[in-house]
Length: 131
Length: 92
Length: 367
Image (cartoon, rainbow over all chains, first blue to last red):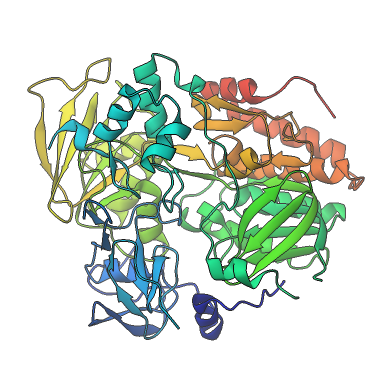
């Protein structure tokens, strides 16, 4: 397998966490039982959403972790301020853009959750972090 | 909330009313509508709105939808960070 | 100066079509690169919990979720095949045959003699008031949330669309103990297989044909919807509007092939409604009008995973043969695959697809 040496913030975090494919832990909106699928528990990690601490499963998409915690409004649109959330789940529609660890316009429907991530609802087009 | 307030381009918040006004003003291709209103220029690059705008054009111009000309497609297929371009090619 | 990486065949997309294409290329001996922007391969297979039909060549009796690893196990044994995950194929420059890949950090340029585009299809949008409200989700998205991550989308779902996806996802919602309050279909009859619809009826889900959604209700998230009856010109019948309480509106109104790269490559495209929208014109070996480019799977026309695996293998074998890499049984295998594909498409429900495929296939016969 080719390894592309990557300097992007998220690529590094994924490397560090070993890129696990998230498996959810059982809980309130998380499925307790399912006739076919079996959801073995994954590593639970803490992250913050607009300052509030939430727990999710490492490696699952941020949007899934937020959804499980009851968060469905992910941002407000730049011009008309309309609430937006999850839509396509494959990173093409751009409804789910949020600011993650200070980096704006992150597609949270495909970006995996890692320990300690700081997730914020984005206002407008977002602000670039200045080094 | 009227029919016309339906959001067609969710990336740039362009409504159906705006699209219809542009068509009435004489912008008859997806490309022109894009350039004037920014519909299709946002992060999803028209993936969500292109077909909806095409349908409006087909209806307004009285042509079957297959005759509505598609805009030009150029790389990148997804938004790319400027820092990725600035770094240039990978060495490995 | 960086060395340009060179491969014989680059396969873009590691869903059922791409996996199948890469395996065929690998078996032929060509150097093959399989690329996917997700961190794990499989495309839409990763959430398909139902068992496949058809022949054993198309994994009949196996669940979709089990199929990617069957391919990966074989691919990882092939030294001439490389798999790159979490990387996006950003652009294809037809004049030089160069593919650019990026992962949010670095760019890589790959020179590929042949490119097989297996990028699949994406959800169509539906225009109705407040269609952008959180809680309005694509059916595929709901399926991913539930079947891959085990998170329910809500408690009461209004399903829009009665094609197979709408019917199957409704049933999967019920399996996850989520209520499907109703399924609305604008056409006068159910679009998908009646066997799926029957399961929903037995589960007590009202299926309303000639009905559509007019408006989503809610301030910041969905809390209801207004549905109305439609007449034959898709206009809402006045006075027929009713409110439905729901917290999720699931749109299953069709998929459209993700063909941006084919446009970039200058391929001749054609709008074929039965296939979901614009598709590349191709020959019966899945080769597009730009002879360096092949198409496989839903990117060539929305069908299903079984057809995707077959067209993927056809594209893989043909691309390899065009470069002189001919596995021993290539011709026999191609003939078998084409007849499998014809068999899948020969069901009465497949008539529109057959017509669509014919309209997208250029005459010219074998290369």
